Length: 82
Picture 1: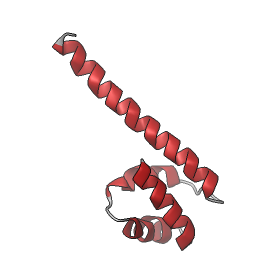
Picture 2 (picture 1 turned 180 degrees about the horizontal axis):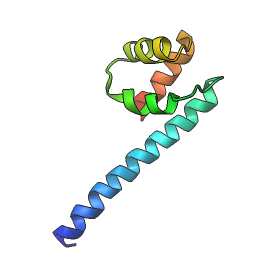
Picture 3 (picture 1 turned 60 degrees about the vertical axis):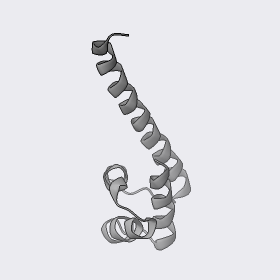
Picture 4 (picture 1 turned 90 degrees about the horizontal axis):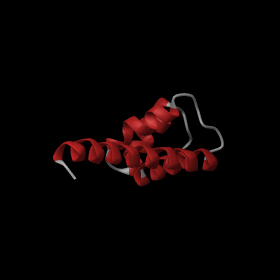
């Protein structure tokens, strides 16, 4: 395989796998949480870089979007899978 072709296929494949992982985890989370609030998918993808389940659950899901602690921990756990 030529280097030019590799420079196209490898990043496209990595982006596809990452997108599929997020899509799958968001779908699983929507099934477990009673109410999926507006803009929750955006925050799901954006806040993955925060470390620690409890920190992410409190800062994003409880303070910004108003989820209760149990739902926030469920969402945060599925974020870790993504």
